[in-house]
Length: 320
Ligand code: SER
Image 1 (cartoon, rainbow, N blue to C red):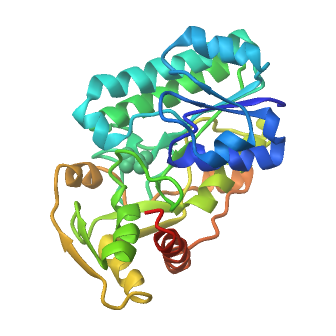
Image 2 (image 1 turned 120 degrees about the horizontal axis):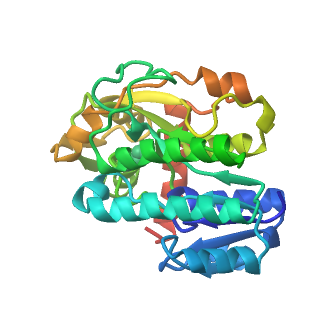
């Protein structure tokens, strides 16, 4: 593919992925798009960007034609916690946005579409430990419902139209550039920011809550490796489990104390506890390892060290 459109380029993953894709495909060949919030200076200054809402199909089509887009990466989504406050909004953005992307890609004979899925596809009934690639998918959040439907829809476009659609089930993504917006795994980012800013954190899930997590450099690598994989070698398409690490909040706190010995944490669980409890502790990602060579690099302590170092720099510069 030659010209990529990143939808949702102001979000936690989209903002960093846009810059990585520009390094590989060239600045002018990666168009960033956002609904309302202006993109970061780094995204704005390094290449083209457009404002539009992914649920507005005619604008999506117009932008794709304007830049002769031949691949779309759709990062626009309403995550689990916000989705529970506003299920209709989650349905609208996650489903109507998705079908718009797939239809425009099909009509314009695009070369590839990347649609992220999530560990939110799992639910009670999925094995807690090492959730298999093929397993029970009965989520209890609207976000999860839209992600299961999204995987099925994406696979439908592969088999019905031969469209190259790919996707992976992201675990909780941890990063310091752009904050996540409204997910259940947001505590795993908040804990590092509050450790630097205040030396303590109030966590909205219990200390023994354990979920699959991944550091942003591994997330970018997984996404780009999957985009570059040979389509003919893929047996799965839009539902790859990708694991990296799995730890409890108490283990995160211990890891932070290696660098900030006086770090304190208290636990005040809210409605997100129930969502976290419905997801597995870890995933089996052998399909991703076998079909496109997935291999993560970061473990908990390596990530903690890098997160704290970078957040401290931002704090000292007065950016946070
Ligand atoms: N980070 C997401 C959430 O918590 C899971 O994919 O909603």
